[in-house]
Figure 1 (cartoon, one colour):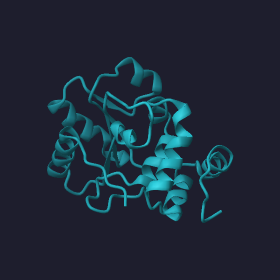
Figure 2: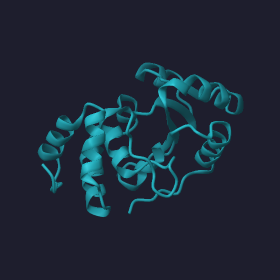
Figure 3: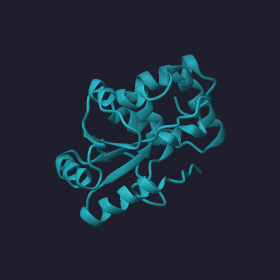
Length: 178
């Protein structure tokens, strides 16, 4: 099973979110989570906080109080690059029916991570495209991937067919489901 040891910053953000918004569904993904799968290690972390779309502004207001100058809400790729800083916090919309963590609901499951790095333009910009095939091969070789969960979420993100085609054409991943 995939587990990631979250940074102190990510745990602090999650703790604040649970205190300030106890009924909010959210997930936290750290860019450095990809270091388990990439050759060129990511040295500068970015925390992606996915929240229910109606509450993004409230979350932004709370987080910018504690982390001034480091929080972006729903940024474009251009804005992301313009205001990038180490340990930046990016608030994104949580796709409905996104897979939630098992040990802690806010943890990012590997299935969500694998879809988001393929479907989210900002996350794709955060590592070399040449690493993508290796990420999938390492993930499928080293961890139990729930393919039903993976492709159901990819479908919600509008990326199911493209992801299946990418895996078939660019990786050695052998899917159990087609």
